[in-house]
Image (spheres, rainbow, N blue to C red):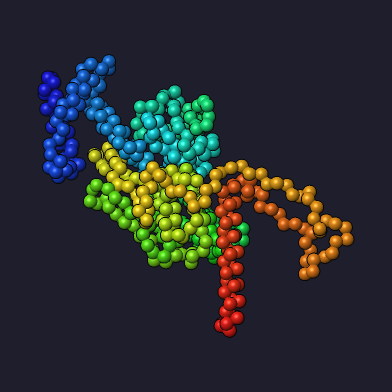
Length: 438
């Protein structure tokens, strides 16, 4: 087959592909296709086809070309095989088999956005920001994201060795993981102290809004809720609608997020429900560098509306929208089509959400005050005038401080807000009494 014939076939193929994507209007608007560049592509294609050391069929070469075209756009635009598309659906449904990692591409390597709670990756200590250099003995450099994900997937109980690079470490390290069935518990709740609740969202799945509603009801039906910590740390995101539902639970209506893109249907606006389910109680939202996408939507909305204090460290900065475009029964393209913006018009992309109060995760050891002598320890000390025995000191919250200093700081802030609120109420009551008001 002559080179000119290959040119004609490839030009016809590319033109047909563009039109199949509904791009005819764009072609008319922008003029003719770049024929010189397409001829260059055809020349390269022909050189590979006739000169590469191994024989590769045309369909495989064209598939490689598509993969490379998408890899050059951004870390989240990928060419998806049937298996990769099914894996995406499994991940958003809350159960799949693998290592439990949310990943993206950066400089040709697979970068960990966040390990999933309770997964083999989390148990092995993998962290947000780690870079996977090898999967087994195969270097990741040059591998597509979908191929890398396929390699990490596998039957439960099977083993895979990862070579990982970490900021601050002089040498890469190896970790061997056993694949498992990842069952993502999207939401869980508990009491930190009487009156102060805690809700952890590990991932935004289709039912997360309903699950958070249930968690709130369980807390509020047991006792009065004076403050709430919403933990979005290491939450890689998920379903957009779920993030709108969650943010809406804590807002009295208003804009949660909007998107902007080049396609007409990519400009969208999402609003909260008209009633705050918590009646305005103080909220602290915890975020870190593993909080991405839907997590950033919730944090940004509550921050812009002044509804919560955002605490922790700057979030990941994934502010782009991906749309899955089916190409055939077995292939699809996941393409970045729009950007997220917070209600005040801040772009999340590559910036993330900056916390109102920055608290780094650290190991903190409380100072031991148990040997200090107080008045109550002195022989013959006078009893308290109120008749209360003060000889037994209250236990400090050192256990929470040493286990999770960020959560400890969030709880401390909520207590402070409530103390000030009670004082304001008392002052208002005193002023009303002084004016003879009831």
